[in-house]
Length: 340
Image 1: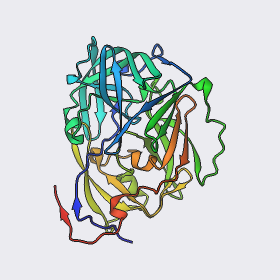
Image 2: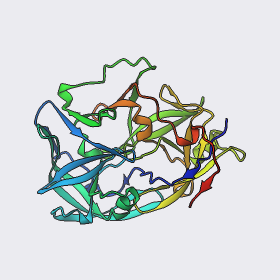
Image 3: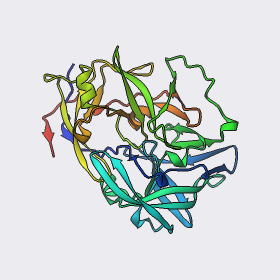
């Protein structure tokens, strides 16, 4: 089987998880509060370029536009968003292909929901930096990124079919006792990437070979399917010198980097068999050894996804819509035109 080359290839801005580092002032602490107006609050979202876009109020500034990104630890505000918040320091954060600096602030209250009920997060640390490149890449005004710190106090259900995120209090809902059939329903145990922090992005287990376990970031800020680092793909025998491939590209907040797409000879995501499908091989940070993979929205949109952050569980329920595979897997006719 070969990968097809599209008649027109566009470099879609694939947004990678923002991985925060060093300063604890950027993380949600024990004094961050999580409250719902009722037992369950629905947050409608726009599914734009395979990104979850929600509206929120931050302090006194309403009608702000955020990406909901489980691959980011913190809330990140654009410098031009107009949110009034006192600077508490500076921090360094790591993204794909490098590090950047940001100011730190503390947000009195972040609110999102619908006309009937809202979620309220109080005393939430955040960062402020320039997100202009993100808005330009998406061709849409983005005021910030709502990282996992904003939803860590809830059980969160991502319903891609109905384009809503449902927030529950943990005492009102539990998935820990759910029994997967490993055909339509699947359960994952999650591992925090940062074991020393009060808030961390989450990793789930997969396999690149019968004897090659591999961690993937649960990342709703990535608008693609699945990525694997080039070092892991090479070590597992997935990426060889003669492996058919298609050149591609991706963006982080401030940088662009090269990737390729291949058809994976073996891939298990928990008990989900993804063998034979197109995945993206990335070359972030010069092929750094130990770099995890990423699973994004175009994989998760085929499921109703429930995250129990406190109990570190992820529950997937397959929906009935046709699965959305990478364009390179679909048959087509025509000549190949490629842009840079």
